Structures are given as C-alpha cells and as structure tokens.
Image: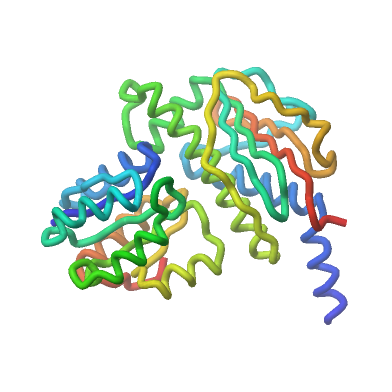
Length: 129
Length: 172
C-alpha cells in the first residue's frame, strides 16, 4: 500500500518517508498540493493514506484537502494533516473539511507511527492526535 | 471571578508574557527536534543583536505581532539537528538539506509560538522561511524593546540563538 507524503520541506518528507517505509508501506513524496493531486491521479488505487502539510507554495494543504474530499475517486482515502500550526480553529476547520486526524510538528515519532498505522488499518485513529 | 479572569488575560497580553511564550516555544521545538535537553544561556545573551554565525533563517510575522523570528546557528549544531529531523546520518546532509532543515526549524518555532498565542486569543501570520549565510540587514532598534530579544540556547556543547523582533499592535 502507498502513502502520499505532501510537504514542501525535504527534511520532513525524508523523515516521514523513512517512518512509512519502516511501517511496511511505500512512500510517494510531493512538494505541494498540486503535485500531490497529480500523483494521486496516477496512484489512487494503491494509496491508503495522504499525509498533508498545511502551509505550502503553489497549492496549500487545506485547498488540496477540499479537492480530495470533493472527488469521488479520492474522498475515501484518509487524510492526516501534519503541520507546524496547532491553532485550535485551524484544527477544527481541517477536521470539518474531512481530515481524519491532525498532528502538530515537531512530531512525536511514536505517536506519528501509531496514527499512520491506525489510519491505514481502519481509516480512523483510535484517539484524535 | 470575572475580575481575576480579566487580569489573567491582560497579563497574558503583556510583553513579558509574550516573551515567555516565545522562549517556551523555542525550547519545546528544539528539544523535540534535537532529542537533547535544551538550556537557556542568559550569560551569553545580547538582547540587541544576533551573534555572527554560519547560517541564518528568518520568518516574517504579521498581524497581532509584526516583525521577524530569526535563527542564528553554526554549521555543526545545524547539521546535528538536520540529521535528527530528517532521520539521516550527518554524512548524508547536503547543503540543500541543511538549509531546508534550518528553515523548517524556524517554521516550527513560529508555528508553536503562533499556537501558544492563539490560546490567548491573539493570532499572527507567518511567511515561508528565508535562509542566508550572512546576518539579515535588520535594525533591532526599529522594534519594541519590550518584545525584541535575542536569546542564546545550548544543547550538549553546541550553541545557537533565536531572536524575536516585533512590534505589538495590542500590547499595553
């Protein structure tokens, strides 16, 4: 199963890719929302999870989340918002827009791994991150 | 009850409270990213300037606070933090990845600081980080001296400095 990792930071993409690989899944990296949607169109049948940053150039994560959830092909794929911004209003906005969970950077790697594993197993986290 | 809640809220909007929130945000983020205990080094602080370093990362802030968050760090500690952040061996850290990592460090500090202040009902915007190998041409005296501060930190034997330069649109 593939996991699309969307972050404009190469540092964050590399760390998330390693965690996803260690969990036994195949990472696909994208640098912004538009690139993620393009890769999703190619791979959506194999994609089990999208990990999505919020603040990115070209297309931000919230816009990308809206497009994913508006698509009949993609809307079933759980989206984990993973961003440096933990402002409560933004967390609520993302969850209302269809994000399955929300994690704030810097990540606790175990919590992140547990959340990824739960979302890939069930589509929902056992606890809201 | 109403009076004490109002008093607490006013204290939370004070420049001193904002400075504490900033220090807390820096220490929290760098502790997680470095996996080390991060200490503040008051003895090494010069509140009115950034020390000369190998690398600088800067984010502009606007709204409730207007100004900059700046990171000044030497290559050694930056490499160590970048290796931890990207889960790579330090030998694998290229210049591009190093620059990306220190940009992400200041981005996460700004994000944490924004989150903390938002809990007090105040919000500000942040830009994407800019990286340079020379100190940005910013005059500390252009900013509110009650908020503007350059703080030295240490983990293991490594040092770095994070500065907040800001004017506050709602501070007393």
